[in-house]
Image (cartoon, rainbow, N blue to C red; front, side, top):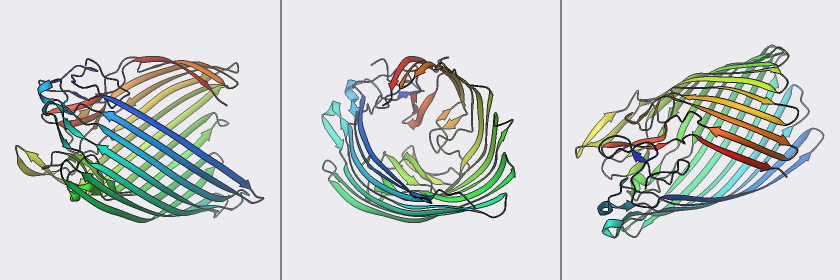
Length: 448
């Protein structure tokens, strides 16, 4: 196979160094890799407006299926052909009910509840085609139930000073059952999370058009199950990840709202960071919890509207996201070695990002937009061995909008910049997925 579909990550990644390295968008494969996805979403939204408050109900059902095959050996050697067929079936039901004030005034409030139920089945197979055998075939059933109650109030302390307090009580329980008839293994585990998630904001109106604020909030990412391998009972599940988020900033508008400028700084403390890495003895990709990490940075956004229909906009962000404490066991020459990854960068966290753009919409429905997007260097693994250098992309769109009809012609990555969206060490090389090359298209949309 000579090429790969960049939008289809069922296509095999390519070795980027060593004797088996291939050119951009070229892969050597002895299987027909593919990725097929189907999903459907249905939602029912009901609102009731009372004189002083509104009640909102959102009910939804989501169904998703995935069927894919990857080439595991990343080469077209028929004597060593390996594939990993994978199917995923998932159904999720959710219900949210919230009530919030609509009268304005010195005190604004909202409250509500949320609940969901999700059933998922993951069927993963590691097949050695050249030997006519299946090495492992874990089939994992996961059933998850969750519920939350939440409330928030914003009070006017003075003419210019406001305080917001919020609290969310979040509960989630997941039961996972894995069975692998090939390996002769089966095990189960249950993950229960009950978290208090407070939030506080203080904001001050410096002038009518300038507002300064500080905020602090606690967040978390639930634990889960590592269904993509058989492994052991100890590697089957991983714990939640916790964050404490601090932010301070200024939001402002100038010149009769023709110029917008926002500036913010943030610091995020991360505990039990979830990390995906190669297990030192099982030769499988495993999700586990590192010790501590942080992310700190600044963000600037500006927008100018010098004339009707014309917008100029730009953004700039700097971010330092590193492990503060993380000792990992790795396999080097069949020897277990402890590595200290403290001060290494977190994966897929660019050191900087920026964007420049211009957009124009005429009263006649003709519009155009140009975006210049920049991304700084980042790493694809905790060891910081797989590195993507900084890159820039230019996108263009021209179109016409009339009533419910919209048609546009567009070009993405106009200068055909080479970059990777996924990077990881593999055997004695680095494997990557190439970002989309220069491409053009036409989009026709009709709204009802």
